[in-house]
Image 1: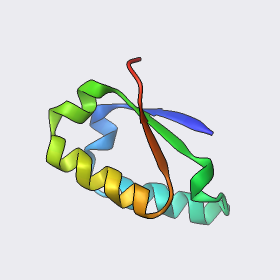
Image 2: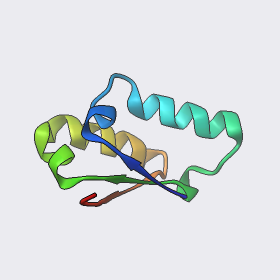
Image 3: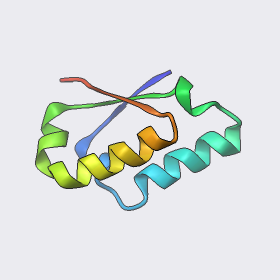
Length: 68
């Protein structure tokens, strides 16, 4: 399942933890989720975006870039 994520949502506090918690609560395997993020969102705060993406990747959530 792919979900578009805005830069504002990506940079919100505890975003990665919230995603993982919802997946666990719904018993959905993390590898089934693809978060689509715009390049602009990634460039707004590169260090922050990298940290969030790494946290999601550590849990097997996929992240792709999308220019929507």
